[in-house]
Length: 242
Image (cartoon, rainbow, N blue to C red):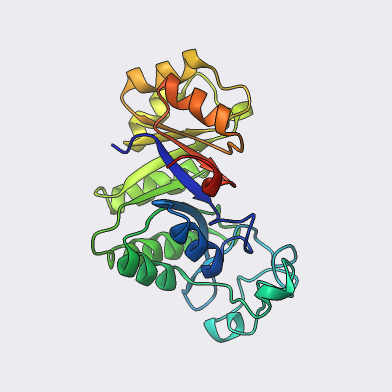
């Protein structure tokens, strides 16, 4: 189990556009050993890297992407919104990221988005992620999601993959032990807001790793590690001691 790990959240997203290869490269070059990123699927089965279910916030396009193909994705600028320096930065694919991980040894937490296009596309997303991650040759990976049904299906199909159950504080009910057992989860990824030392101890005593999101204070990160957290997701990985 990983210990005291700093995950560069969506890459080094304060210095480069989030969830782009530029952000992942900067994270690696800054010394980060792990990144966190988000994946979903488009109509031809390509697994793309994007946090939102629409393109409006982080690209020069608008609307959803479920009907798009790989050739459509090539036309999307995912960098200009951030700065002129990154004009023309592409919306990456999971295949590109896996290639980069194999090249550099970078590890990744892959968050599977809760696909909104139905069961068939969700199964295709899970299968596509499993297939791409099977190409990894050395780097470590954790697969996480807020969609616990999706995680359950993935773990059934690929029991060798480490999974982390994502929780907002408002959804962290007392049944978390039962859910983690049913999932065969390796990690719980709780929201930082409201998280206490006692709760971290409960999680660790239960036998799972605890990776906390999103922590943008070095002091808070140190406190969480002292409590027994195994990792933190942060937008300032370059400012937190690796």
